[in-house]
Length: 160
Image 1 (tube, rainbow, N blue to C red):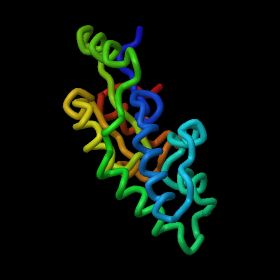
Image 2: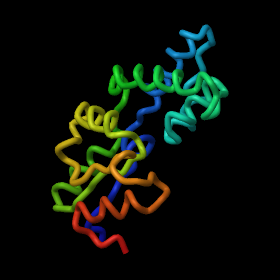
Image 3: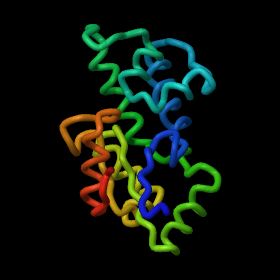
Image 4: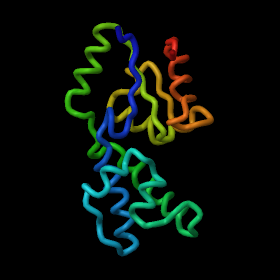
């Protein structure tokens, strides 16, 4: 019987694709590049900011313009973090059922806390999740097991 569940955030619990795409396209437009269609951007959103910059500009980490472009992208995203973002259809009911049946749920994401917490507040999830483990909470990001193990400790669950 399931007692606890941990969700990823982007692309699993919440559809963040449009806000991320809008931020990427805003930076592209500022560089006089055309917008990319959402269908091109969507598969990359759960891979993080570095992957988004690579998709949008062809820059790898270490490219002279990479860090500044990434900074602009994240700044624009942070200012409009929940304009279009919403829980996937049916997820609110899933979370409510977990809460009604006294099952514990939490969030484990590679997104940094300075972006995760405002997003979860905007979605009214920040007080509901039993734990929130962000990309800067522990030393390693997923797929390393450290974030999941840390989340299990926070919710007092055996990760085995």
